[in-house]
Image (cartoon, rainbow, N blue to C red; front, side, top):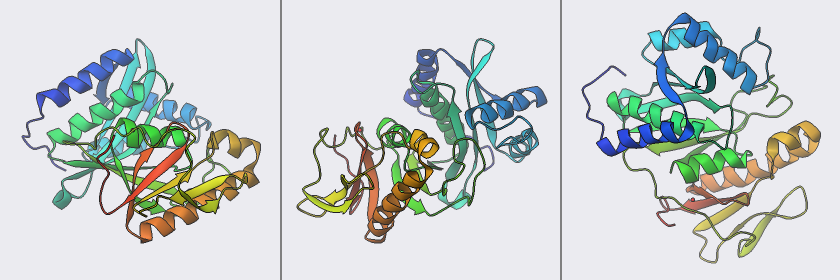
Length: 283
């Protein structure tokens, strides 16, 4: 996506600047060798890989910048607290693609600041949407993407990357959920259904014996539960984690085939899927 003259609404620029201030970081794109190497090392730490086998090698990141993408770095003083990579998407769709975004801590708002910086960058280049993927079993990421940002789950990808050997995903199948973020008008925040309220009609049972998925009386909404901490479960009991993977995969692939999209995630780990368009209710 080439650089075009596009006006970014002042409210969106102010939101990005405010998110960085609230997180206590300075955010900037980096294109120098040292800055990109620092980001590559940061991704090693996040994904628990040796520095010699980075998940995103510095030379690849540098090439992506040279090709028109951007690497953003969020610094807390001299310490790198977050980073991301965004690349142009399909020009005819006025799309952009977030290859990766990560923060050192999940409770400071750094991730939100990084995504807002990506948003401004993409809007400056004429994009209207941004897409990325994440592991649908990781509820905290689902809540951030669906509830905090207002993106919508639009595609379920079975074993998207094939086997992965990093310290977070090793031993599991790499299913991913694609989300699409409307950069101008994200979906309104949706807190999801009340806590501890199961669906009206249970359709699937989870590997732990509890309810996994169910539908409302009108069959327009479907809910699906994920484990409380999929990353910890994967490390402690890989076989059980794989059973969860396959169970959630069955629910999502059936739902997408019926025309559902993913519209919310509650604090207690229940997805909301909606048939017939995006939900505009109360994440």
